[in-house]
Image (tube, rainbow, N blue to C red; front, side, top):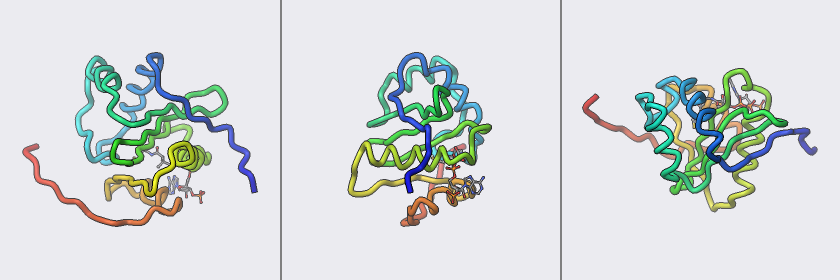
Length: 139
Ligand SMILES: CC(C)(COP(=O)(O)OP(=O)(O)OC[C@H]1O[C@@H](n2cnc3c(N)ncnc32)[C@H](O)[C@@H]1OP(=O)(O)O)[C@@H](O)C(=O)NCCC(=O)NCCS
């Protein structure tokens, strides 16, 4: 059955820097493994401009920006939907779209084990657990 979804992916541009920064503020530390401290706005802009990912998209629902999804150079997918737009099937649609637009033999997702919602989300989308990675750092 075809999904009745209004979800679209659009490549990030300059006008999205503030939206992405605000999205980053919604992120709780447990959600992400690599990003612990909130950057300043200018650090954030520098990061986006550095083209850190193979593809970085804004997720739009109708005309509204509702989140962001990227594909890293190592074929890892990262996704973040605005809090008040979650559980409306947008995550499912965005994940399907990014994989269709960028066919790969396999995709990866790095998920913090404490992020149960996200684990459920990726499992429901047929991602399988392949490894646990441990780290030591000076924080
Ligand atoms: C994880 C996330 C992307 C899911 O997006 P979403 O748009 O809310 O997901 P959907 O509405 O498409 O739901 C997809 C499936 O995930 C599951 N799911 C989503 N939110 C859930 C929740 N709060 N609790 C349990 N399961 C949940 C649902 O069971 C749903 O299954 P279904 O398709 O059988 O109904 C979103 O919650 C989010 O942005 N979280 C914060 C960022 C993050 O943790 N990203 C992951 C690290 S990259």
